[in-house]
Length: 236
Image (cartoon, rainbow, N blue to C red; front, top):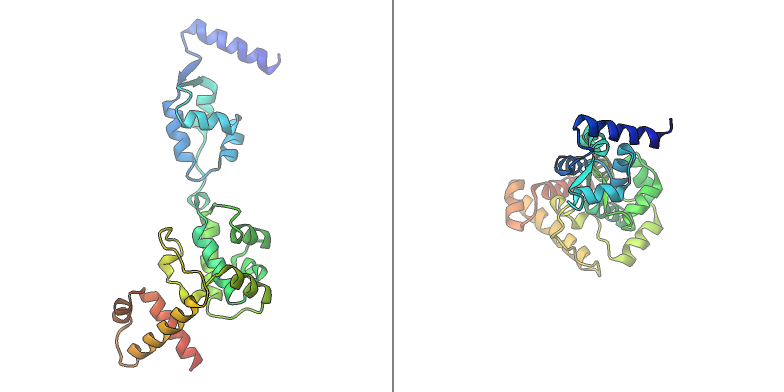
C-alpha cells in the first residue's frame, strides 16, 4: 500500500470513528511562534515534513483549520537550544567593521571567532540580517580579544575608510547592538571625537576621579572609560 492510499484509508477510518481529519490551527500557530525563536522557516519545514509557505500561512492565521497529521507533527517539534535562536546581525556587523577599521582582516576575525571567513564576509557585507545567538557571542569574544591591538590588513583599513567605519575607540559597548544609535560617517569626525575623548579621560583620571564619575561626566559607559585607561597605561 502506497502512502497516499494509507492516508486515504486513515481519513476514512477517522470519519467512521467520529474523529475529524481537520482541526483548528490555533494551537499549532502558537507552537510555530515559539519554535521560530530558535529555528528558521526552512528548518521548521524540514522537521514538519511540509513547506515553509504552508507554515507561514498557519502562523499568520490564513489557514484556520489544518490536517490532523500536520497538526500533530508541528506539536511534536521541540525548540532548539537557546544558543541557536536568532538575533539581529547589527551588533556583530558593527563589531566586525570596527575591527577592520584598525587593520584586522576578515580571516583574523574569523579565526578569533572560531568561524569561517565567508561567514564574516556575509555579515560584514550586510547580506544577512539575523545570526544565531552563539555566533553573535563568538563575535563579541573576538572583538574583546582584538579591539586593543592593531591589525596588519591594509585591505581591511582601506575598506573601512572607504565606508566610513569607525574603530573601537569611537564605540561604547552598548551602542553596538542599539538600532537607535546611528554612528557618524567617519569623515575624520569619529577620529577627532575618539582623540578628544581620550584627552578628557586622561585629564580627569589624573585627578584621581573614579571611573564611573568620569563616565557620568562625559556621558559614556564605565567600560569605555576603563578600556581607555587600560590603553593609556599600556602606552605609558
